[in-house]
Length: 169
Image (tube, rainbow, N blue to C red; front, side, top):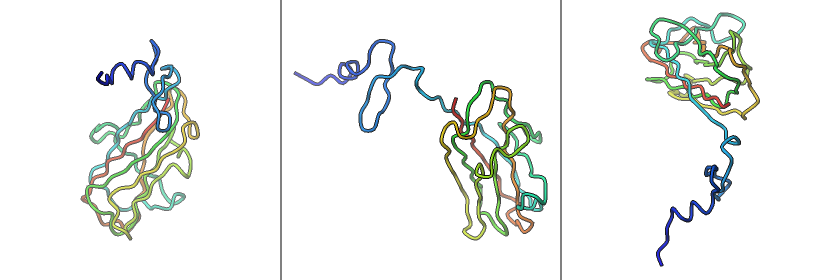
C-alpha cells in the first residue's frame, strides 16, 4: 500500500474549508477566518539631501506609489485594514546622514513606531519591521502613503529607494 498525499490532505480538510498552518500541524479552517495580506509598492529615485531627519523641522518628501513617475500620490484603501509590515531598500548604501521612511494615513504619520531608519553609520541598504495586525488601522477610503526624511548631510544622492507597505484586512 502506497502513501497518497492528496488523500491525506483531503482527510485534514472538510468540504468548503482550506488548509491553514497551526504551529507544526496543518488543519482545516474556514476561509473567512484567514487574514489576507497584500503589499503596496512605493519608490523614490535619486534620494536627495536637505529634508532634515528631525520630524519637527521640516515636511517629509512623499514617495511615488506604484511607479507613478513625478507624481506623489497615495493608495486609497478599498476596505478597512491594518498595517502589518514595512520594508525599505536602497540601491546603494546610506551615506552622510540617516534616511527615515514612514507610513502616513491621510497625510499624518500613522505612529512614531511606523518608521524604519536606514543608518549611514552602518551603510545600511535595507531595513524592515513588522506590526501586529489590528494595531495601526485604517478605514475604507483612507489614503496611505510613504514619506521620507533625509538628513541634511545625506550624500547618497544617486541611490533609489524602494518601499513595500504590507497590510492585512
